[in-house]
Length: 309
Picture 1 (cartoon, helix red, strand yellow):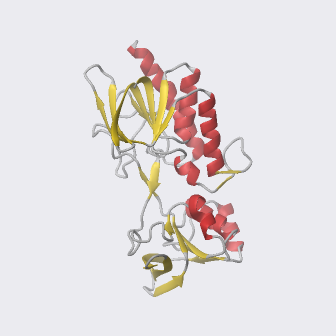
Picture 2: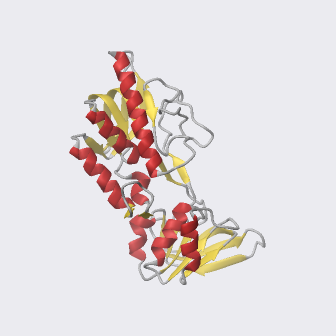
Picture 3: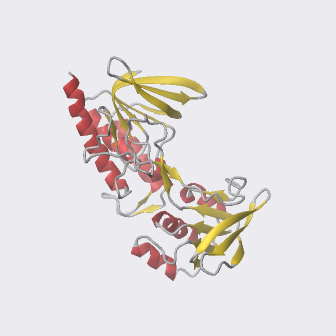
């Protein structure tokens, strides 16, 4: 398949950029491993313009419907492994799909691959993954209705997790390594007022305990070093995100976190490759910012495509 613009990733930045490309009659296609990215993993959303209140799954679905309404092809189940520039100046995108090799060709590429959850690397974490240990409260939270659970983390994603869980679980622990919560004030206030939420500060999670299912969490107090075990049936880890940028060519400049370095219109260090959204070094990771970045990057990409004519 050869297109003018290939967008890699299926979430906010990809959707916004694709719609603008289609309206300018650019031959554009979206490829992604799945749809929604971290947007779909978000819980309650009340700060995205145009929606008084929604949730991640509903918003991601709305994005997709708008893309489809603009007749933009979407191919899911595609994992990009390499991007190389051929002798004719086009980009060859190598990928895996359904266990086989696939290739795409494009005059320009927009990378909007987002991020994935960071792991704790605690004892028992890998063995109990999806057996009580999970990284997506929106996806898995309803499975733990009526159970005792813990959210691990102290930023907005952890706070959103605890807020969702407090509505369906009789007891929710919120474990943070910090001495205070870091996030939106309204979230912190709601959690501190919740009768069924216990916030544990200075908690360094060391071990997930269980054989076939999670039974307990063991943590150290970062100040006193006291070891405590709490019995839970579910643990939701929200301690940060890692950019999905490993497949990019070495010529693409990244910062020490692995984020793609871009200018204000989404240009990377390689001409013809653009990037937008959470995978970039933009300091604030917000859905509204990602959509704006996607639009800016596509408008600049269109100028780039015009220059090739």
